[in-house]
Image (cartoon, rainbow, N blue to C red):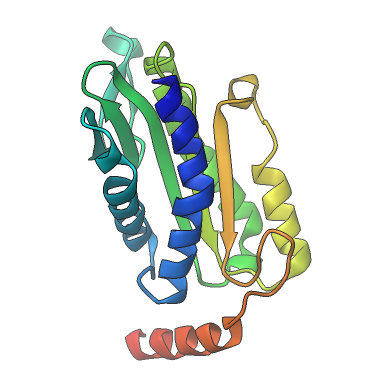
Length: 198
């Protein structure tokens, strides 16, 4: 189990995040449903398939506690070991329209969704050692980008330390705020696609 969790952390940073970025640049991701589908696709094809006893569940329900105090944990994706049970979960958020004007709202929404990962940790604390939040945005404003990254990469509560991994993927730039190659062409085509659907 420990080996799988270490390899999952590496998979997310080295494979999943770059592939989601590439999917978005190729217009395979236009909204949150697309993001969830593509993340599940890559996890299933390139991570889960490497292990005989591991599988993926989309939008699972997990009950925590009993009676009136029961809570529901409903992450977007859960990774499960058939023998040991669930050991990791994902929350996925997508903001490709006017994201630079919505940074406080984005932060609030992401923190609200991260509560699902906290509940997942409470439910499977003996087995789970990591969970992930992946946030896909288009923010050409450097200060807004830095505010978002700083806010979402702090340990807001003690349970997050060494457990929660947050990846902010900005289609405009990389993590060092260097503009991505081909961004201008992507942005122009994105505006054309939006105009056709509104």
